[in-house]
Amino acid sequence: MADLIGRAHLGRAADGEGIVAAYEKWGVTLTTHVEGEYSYGVYDATARTLAAGQDALGVRKIFHGKSEGATWVTSDRRFLCARFPHLRPSIDPEVLGEYFS
Image (tube, rainbow, N blue to C red; front, side, top):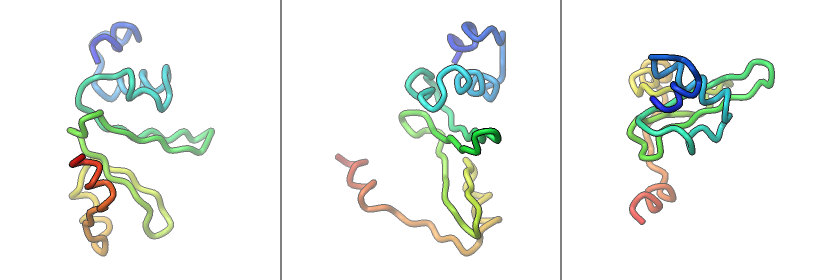
């Protein structure tokens, strides 16, 4: 992140500012350029697109889905429990198999 901040001329920017600068420079491919622990969600109101991602190791988790006609992205599981109490955690067997392979 420090390398990106130096190139983006942000000085000692907060992590969020570094992610925004990376998104502005590389778009959704920022995850191939930025190292460290992070998750992000960026909504582009002009293009009406939502981009979300996390670090390659998945240290900073990101949760996403659709419910009640809305798309949501969060890094806080407690938000999900509070906002969508009807949701139940589940494990995708396909993803689990990839995780252990």
